[in-house]
Length: 327
Figure 1 (cartoon, rainbow, N blue to C red):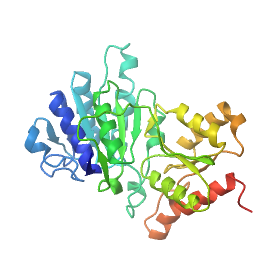
Figure 2 (figure 1 turned 120 degrees about the vertical axis):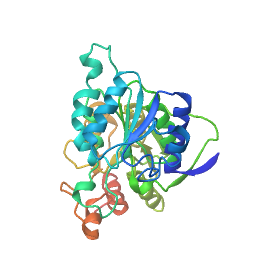
Figure 3 (figure 1 turned 120 degrees about the horizontal axis):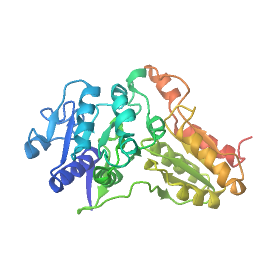
Figure 4 (figure 1 turned 60 degrees about the vertical axis):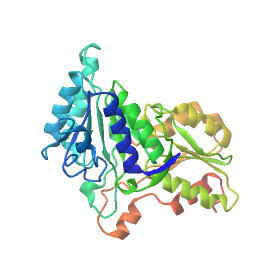
């Protein structure tokens, strides 16, 4: 095993796949000459050249359209967005072309493409740069949606995404690029659509993904100090969702709390709560509860940022509520 940073894990995934398959290439704003806005693609221009590591104009709709066309003609583009907030400009190509092409062509024209970049809040960036988009893209048939929380999963799932024949939304976090973790020395892949139980427990299940896993794990640590055993699940893939792992955990713990950085209406936690009450209702000893971002744009002031996002204390309190430990 070796320890590397999150950004290095992403870079290794792309480098290995580009060495393996000459049809794989990277394009996006500042990915080449500047080595990436977050230095994820550092050194890749020198290795692969300007035909496979391509700087684009500041025109998300335009370069996304070029990449989608390339994917439909046999190439495997990796498109980097500086933030998923900017990818709103490319939504027509992602939603109306990439996701629908296989169905519209009767299975004759696919679109093997990865759209990747940082998602959600990253501190004081204001309302227009702080939205989490997993639930929006997970609502689109034809897309696969991955949202990772650590270097190991980032590398293994990005390699799987690049090899996948469907369009994949791959969501990272700006505040995690420097996080370090262990990965194997050799090649490895992680299957798309498989959640991971990162902490075993018996009293309550906490489900989360992306950087909210830090909140989930922090809450589990605090609960352990009070002899409350929390099982923590990292979804990793949002669509397709690994229902089986969630069901099996709820059958064991009989309680479920979901932590996510989405707005509450029509969110991922909404769908999970619906499926659990539909298919595992008899195992529940308390209502499914969730903690999300507030139902509002995120403002700039530090106190409002803190109030907006899920945190450890609120998650701990919610767990105590489902365990009927709160008066």
